[in-house]
Length: 230
Length: 99
Picture 1 (cartoon, one colour):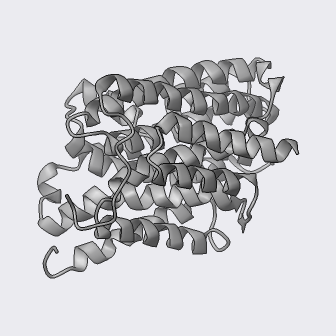
Picture 2: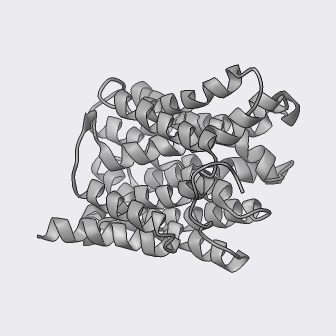
C-alpha cells in the first residue's frame, strides 16, 4: 500500500453501500434545508424565492449567506457577492471532479448543478470505479431532499426543531471527516489536509465568511513547486 | 430587488460551477498540476471540517460540536462504518446540549 499512515476503509465497499451513504448524507443535509426555508422566510423572502434559491443556486453555504445578508438589512449586492465568494470553492471542486466523473453536454450541465461539498466528498472518497456513483447518488439525493425540505421549512414546518438540538451541526463535520479520512493514505495527502486545516483555523478570525475554506486550498501550492514528485 | 439577487446569485454560482467543469483536462496534465488537482478537494474539505466544527461567526469556539467531532475521529480511527460515525457525533452533541 502507500508509505503513509494507515487509513480507515472506504466508507462503502459496494455500490449498495455508496447509495446508502448517499441517502444518509441527503437526509442529514435535508434537515438543514428545513432551517434554510425557515431562515429565508424569516429574512423576508417569500416561499417562491426560498424555493428558487434551493432549486437554482443549490449551494447551502451561499444560500444561507444570501438570506442572512438580506435579512440583516444588507444590500443585494453584498448578498450576491457573499454567495458568489462561498460558491467559488465549487469551481475548485470541479477541477478534480471533471477527471473523476465523465460528463459531456447536458450531463455536464447537470453535473455542474450538483457540484457541492457533499457530492465532491462522496466522489473523492468512493472506492475505485465508484466515483461517478458516489457523485450522482449524493448529488441527486441532496438535491431532492434539500428542495423538499426547503419547501416544508418555508411553509412553516421547520418550527419542529432546530438542527443543533439534534446534534446535526456536529454530524455534518463528522460526515466530512469520515469521507476525508480514507483519502489520507499517503504522507503527502495527510500533510495537505493538516496544512489546509491550519490555514483555515488561522483565517477564521481574520477573514470574512467563505474565505477561510478557500485559503485552505493554498495547502496544495507546495505540490506545484516541487522539482519532482516523491 | 430580492428576485434580482436570487437570479443573479444563482446564475453566477452556476457559472462558477460550470467553469470548473469546463477547464480542459489537457490544462491539468502536468504531473505537478495533477497531484495538486487531486489533493485540492482534500485541502478544501479539511478546511470545511474546521469551519463547521469550530467556527462561530468569526470566532473560534469549542462547543458540543467539537465533542461530537472528537468522538467521530476516534470511531474513524477504529474504522467504524460511516453512518455510525455520523450518528455518534450527532448523539454526543445532542446529549451534551440536553444535559
